[in-house]
Image (cartoon, rainbow, N blue to C red; front, side, top):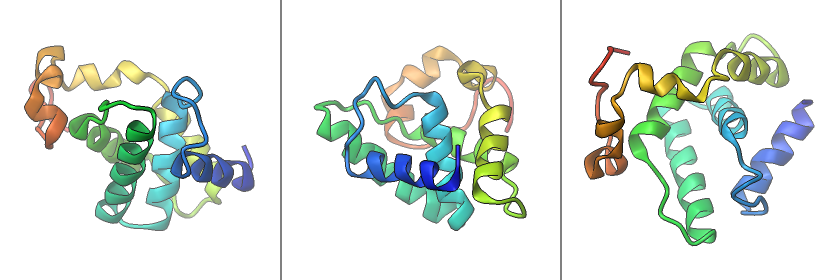
Length: 129
């Protein structure tokens, strides 16, 4: 994707112009990498949280998960290269983190299913980050 296409995706998420089925794992990563490319982790995390909460509410859901969101933001931050152009950096993050089950190498399904993990950051129980 080009820089322009990535920014259009981010805009469409922020304005809730995507359906639930259109916004997949790779798109989450693209938005995360874009936010991180322009800001530090905490600012990017706040923006991601706000965008996902708005998107979820727009589609009538309460699917937001704080621990999973922060996990992927941390992973994206570790693979981001701000010395590259946006599209190359985003592509690098998406390629490195394509396996959406990576989270289960760090967290048990039971912990991720807990109300606490959904509402607040919970450290991994299987493997340290």
